[in-house]
Length: 489
Image 1 (cartoon, rainbow, N blue to C red):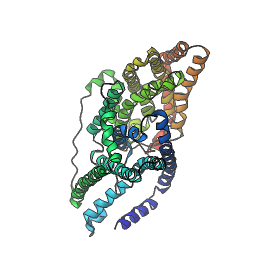
Image 2: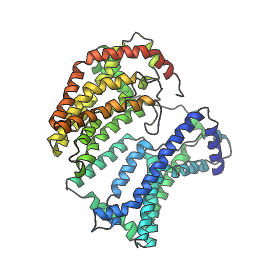
Image 3: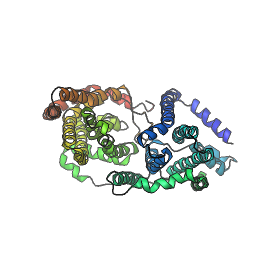
Image 4: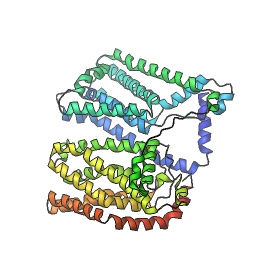
């Protein structure tokens, strides 16, 4: 029966009306997947020697065990966004003599074959092979691999249970940030506490039974949940949806622009893809820790400027590059009304400006690493406010591809076109080039000052620039409407 299910889904894919688009995307994603797997395999093979070089007095296996708790939390966090739940059209099977248990087992089996489960294996298997060549006990290493596979599958099935639960996502994010903070500032060593737990999978092979039993238990919980949901009546029952209402009457104080601002805020909060952009933006405020905590980046000021532009403008990039495609499902209706285009664009500008200021405030703790970090982030925030907002808004006038708001942001190419790649040149590369030239010719103060001045000039010319961009949107109006109506775009 499993073979029959696989055959039916294979035929469904190749007989789809959108085969060209689906096949093209899968081929591109396949190349990226192969590159990632090969990179992980190479990293795993070299990790033994890297750890030996960095920690000469410590066993590489012990070092790996120290970071396992972070790996588990990070994988859960990333799977929340990236891993799509295994689905199949089960309705036709509910009127046939196919056991519900068979359908449930097939769905869970497909989930176990996910590429996200292969990522860890492509890292640990080459690492384990190097361990064997360096005299580590064969039985211990092989059972350690089995234990890791058990942990990976446990994470996979836990994700199926908690996926799309915002509270769980926030909890995992807090644990990650709290654990790293306690470790970094020396308050409590999370690594030292959990290292013996994960090292036991290698040192005491009998402990491999723990992740194996845990996997079987979580699998059974998923199986029971799915089997109890597979009923034809469930398809006939009207789905009750709780209305998510919120009082945003405060937006009325912004006049005509307030109605658009209210519409944007509701859209962001009520849809998966836009809400995920907010979470991702907040998450990337920790991106600076990758650079500020590393000695090798301490003297690379252009890299710090990149981090400043990126952190303070992450929502600008993620949200702004798809303006007005976010409104594509009702854009034609909006354009048929007596709605001033300028007010519509000004509401987008106001929303992005608030995000830049908010992200800059979140980066204030980086002053711990020196006043240079604060100055660079401040200059980059001003540049984003004055220059990058008009730039990304202008490029938005070329968007003609529809976006379905209830789709996940990862692995989703809806709305993407050459525009999204081209806009990154003026938004990210140009300010870094400007900063680098004036930093190396003059000084850090001059480079930061220039970014700030450019931002202030752009902000002073905001009304004029929005006027020009408004005319551009009016010229592209009918092309956008036609493009947004194409649901397969």
